[in-house]
Image 1 (cartoon, one colour):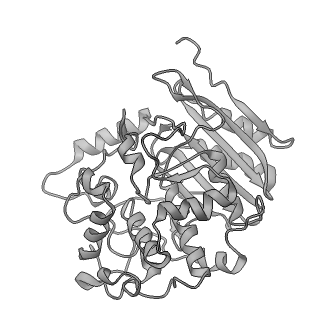
Image 2 (cartoon, rainbow, N blue to C red; image 1 turned 60 degrees about the vertical axis):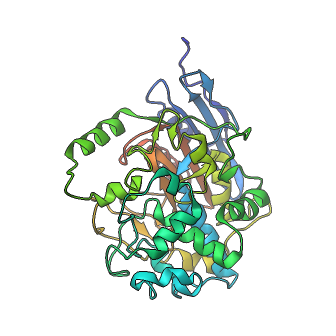
Length: 391
């Protein structure tokens, strides 16, 4: 294989050329594959893709290539939760145990739905290591979290629930909707919009899915983290990400972690979503403007869902800059800048970003298969370019 150029393809509306230039700069390594989609007022203004979906084989990233979106999946869960609130079957201010009685164990009877969504429930990680087999078993993980005592007094602070957030919110949705989160993603988001967004992709699916790879900086940082690990102390931030052994610290390895067919097929709503950039951007667009005849969240629902709930220093782990959280939505902050203060969405491990901006009527998604550390600037440069165009 000698030709390793990005071979970018797609569409850019007049006036958005600076955004396309910033996207081209995201191809920092020869093996990079990526896609970018931006909708404004429900219409596609940028739809670009290129590079490799699997550099090992030379498979190119094509128009309908999907990839793991990691924590962008939490954004989808937060949309579904907001819709459940709008329909009157869920209330942010009510105890979780009213909908999920088993959750009241270990002193959690007073934990509110809002606290679960805003990373304040005290269940950011399992107290004891969980295996991959447990992580792939819905009943096992929801029972584990229902029985577990919180790591801190719920409501008194927050820490990022990297994976557990998905099972907590997903089980709440299952209890109030009578169907699981994978089916809800399909019936409430994907099908009405014709959007390629998925939660739980069977191993025999024909979906073209990119192979995620670990970038140089992420590899260096995770190596340093492993070297600094102390056997006599639990690193709760690492436990939140790996569950203590279910997944690698990088979340992927060749054909392992979230590259593994069995993991892709499981329902892991904290990080297991798979989508195309076009599909993810279309969903976010529909949260703020009618898109393909669909509006997912009305103005009142949205206002309640983006009220700030958590910000500032986290408990247990983490370092600045700090994210801000609404009812599961990641709000504009120094940690994740959108187009302006009204932006909301969720980014994902390795550089993935999806968000909406009601001020400018924007739905946005950037996906890449070369995962880098949290301060990776690829999406930030693209968002900065978009801001210069629309703002």
